[in-house]
Amino acid sequence: MLRDGEGLARRLASGHTRKGFLGRLGATMVGLAGGGVAASTLEPEVAEAYHFCGHIYTTGSCPSPLGLPRIDRDGFPLRPKDGRRIDNLGRRVDAEGWAVDESGHRLLGPTGEPVPKAPRTRICQDWIPESYGFKTRIDGGWYRCCGGTIRKLVDCCARHDKRINGDAALTGYCYSGRKVFCVMYYQTTVKC
Amino acid sequence: MVETIVPVVHGIRSWIVSLIAFAAGALLTAAAVGLALGVALPTGGSPALLAAGLVAVAYAVGELGLVRLPTPQLRRQVPERWRERYSQPVTGFLYGAGLGLGFVTYLPVATLIVVCAGVALVAGPLGGAAVLSGFGIGRAAVLAASTWGVRSYECATGRVETMAGWAADGRLRRANGLALALLGAVLLLAASGATAKAATRLDLGPDPVADPSLGDGDVLAYDEVAGGVVEGKLLAGGTTADLPGTHPDVDGGRVVVDSGPGFKLVDVGTGAVIRTIPRAGTDPALSGDWLVYRRVASSRRELVAFNLVTSETRVIAHSLLRTDLGPADVSGPRVVFTRTSDRRSRLMLYRFDTRVSRVLREATRAVYAHAEVDARLVVYTRQLSDRQQLLRLNLRDGTGAVLRTQRPGSGRALWTVSVNNWRFAFTLYTATEAWIYEL
Image (cartoon, rainbow over all chains, first blue to last red; front, side, top):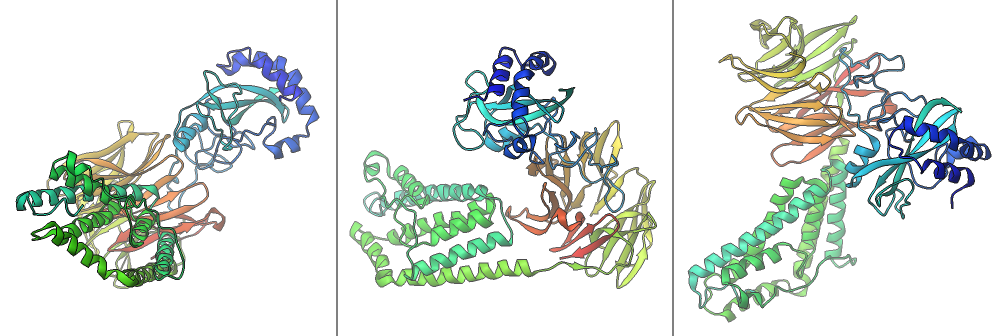
């Protein structure tokens, strides 16, 4: 059921607690050998079109402001194309949460006041419980090489038999009876 | 069931008590159904009216026998054993509660379906409960009419049979069909009227304008941005005059502006400054004795209410600096404002008389902003990832409607709004221009 490279990476990664990114990175570097195989045998564009780079399973993306579910280390949404911080409306925001333009200047209304702020909440921990009505948890992830740096693919897990696609959910890296509801990714700056 | 609640054997007093119990049961469950339907869907504007009108027309055609449409019903009768097990008032309450649900018994006409669809599509929870309460009252009224003053069970059943005779030969369904067709036509006309009502761009000169505040008649205060400088303007009687500050808010014959070091009250008729209030803050709003404004104090944002007569000062809302505490508007005892934190955006209502705030709208993937209130009518903007909307909310019955939708692709965005006596004004702006429109 698992493809070769992905299966190796999953088996290697599953032996670790996956509680923190840095703790997991060491195991991931070993797993990259397998992940690299998968990445090299798939055209990046094809993988991106199928779902997103590094993810060739059918479990759908978690809902996110701009489609592709790129997150930061805490689970907050980032702009997929460059990893900039975005709010729940998909607008680029500064560190205080105000919407900014591409130069980083605050967006202003016609009389010079900043445009209203939008909430910025975590995709798995906040969006899914709000939208679907059950608790979720990030249990773990696995790693791929995407765009020249390591990408951590993250399972958003729930005690729910159906995944976001509407069909039967898979166990994935979820613990304690939880199953994968949807997937997200965290793009590191570690070259691969 | 009618034989259970009649003034025979148990007497008039027991009949009255049972009838009241029946009415209470029917009213309770019917209102609960209305409440549930009211919260099932968001209250919508003209699209919702259109959908409700189409449902009414479809079932009107069905009632006239031209098409067959499904009528959800269980066709059950009330359990006879209840009247052996319980006292007459308890039985009356239970029978009322069962019949108040509507769909769990026989429905001879489709009116209830149309009403329920209309409630789900158009009304809010309170409005839905009120509308469906009418159904419960109707159930009780029929029972009262069929049992009033009867001296025997046979007389009661005879009345019911007489009523049933009125519906013979399809007369009732035909009459109901015509009534539903009339209702559908009214709803469809309302829907088409709502969509056809276009906003009018006000001719206020070549410079960008924003922050409208509608007064009575042709009075309009607003901000004009000329050469990067914001200036308050007052349009009254066809003449535009400068105001001694910005962000104006009209209240009857007065307008308040932010003059920098404080606020100034200006007479709309003469243009004279009638009072200066030396308080630091921004975005003033005025109604009666109360002036409400924003300020930043002690590392937090505050909405402050100042009583112009007693000089009482109240902090009616506060937040962390990180939270976007929007400007407030005041009308009578009500203050509306928005509050957007990292976690959620809220449209809030505060009342001076109760000193209590409550949440009117709440969202995590939308932004509420630019709230204004006039009596019990609230207007505000809601921004989603794919559109921005101008909405109204009637606090009287909880109903709301979308007044305008702006898509990002248009290059224009909604800004500040105003409401006065069911007239609406709003700001549209681009990177270089801004206009005020009136609905």
